[in-house]
Length: 616
Image 1 (cartoon, rainbow, N blue to C red):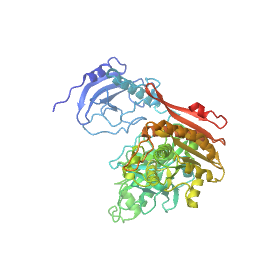
Image 2 (image 1 turned 120 degrees about the vertical axis):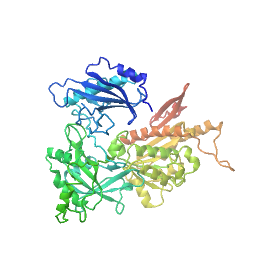
Image 3 (image 1 turned 90 degrees about the horizontal axis):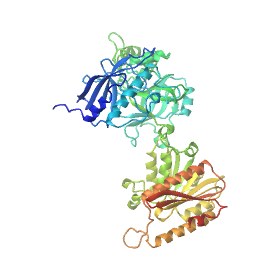
Image 4 (image 1 turned 180 degrees about the horizontal axis):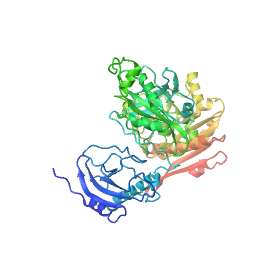
């Protein structure tokens, strides 16, 4: 099969480089069937000033997808006349397979590399005539910054070096480290020991580090997972951990790839690795491969003090075992260690790094979370139907760490048109919803009660009393009366969220008091509910089932989720600034001539009795 021809877009991209200072075309577009990409070989020249970190001129492959200007663009040093060390914002710069003309160390010229923004425009173009040029200019800026050691500046987010993963890296080793556990580690002197980890069936392709122990089996630290994920023997497996005072790197910024490189990197920071490795070897000398963890402290930003531990997982190779020993020596641990250093742990042996990640609550919620004072509060959600399930899930996904779900109903197939649960969850709603939410995060503690509110048992009622915030989503007068009858230990924040028929509006009443003010709640909400019924009289209520008329609450899932999201905003504001004065809000959808016009909020406080007039 003949090689394809370069597209006109690719030729236009190459022509855009004509006359670009510091850029020389070494080889035009070539098709590489081994990787299914086109590559353009360029020689890049930068002014290094007084730096001698890299050569002034180096060769680079710019590999593009056949759909250029779409697709990824790889920028990698050539095997011939390319850089051979690894810098910041670069993959580990090892050699690649023989048929590929570039090394593995493709560089990051993404817009997130803040150090390049000073000299190159930060908006990636997508036209054929500009995109390749943009990447070439960014590569030139990357080389200039690398020469001056300015790829990672003080104050910028700290970046780990790229740890090249081994063939057995199909799963992630997840640990749970934050500022609190870091303080605990600061008081621990041990440098080597066991760790125990679990492989929960609910989490695919991942292991959870449960606790760290000394070599004498004394527990040093337990991971703060939620109760669901705090597993114990006999399900736990064991590995070995080694803790270093500093991140070991091969300069400028390469993760060690062999045991010899790791030993040398440790020596540069004043650590003798061999005694630590020897201690670890005695803990796992059983002829099997084990998971290992190499730990070191990390800062949040470059140049700042360390704030948390990082554990990089690796495969501790199978060591000399049983009668294996050097010829002429007895099978003693010290002699087997001598054999390990010449075979499994020899300086030239590759380290098999594994994928590892920090799954602490702060880390995994960083993409979007509620404020800390809301996340740290415990919530009880009474009613996990359409509205309650959406609110509970939004709270769990936004970082709330403790939820209690209360509902007596069983999920029906008809509920699924607007519920977060599925066909596999046709059981008690509270049970099924709790099982769903513990799958959202290993750090959320979800408890449930499958029964009415208030619970019959005093022990169950005590569970409700312990929570900080109660959210009622039932729309039930019976529940409102039960809340009013409860005597809390001090003020309790209770929030009631009720949907109008058709979910055009939601009514949110909150009170921070020792007794829920049911009379005031009804005074404000009942006239609005009566108006809702009047609005639906002409159209009639929908029904389901055969035989006796079975009216159902009319509401579409998109309307419910929209108003549930608005309720979360109200909950955030109320929890952040609780007030002894109760608060009532109406949030309603607005129609415009173009259709949906957004949400509008009508707010009411007890001293301003203008709500009915405002809504009418």
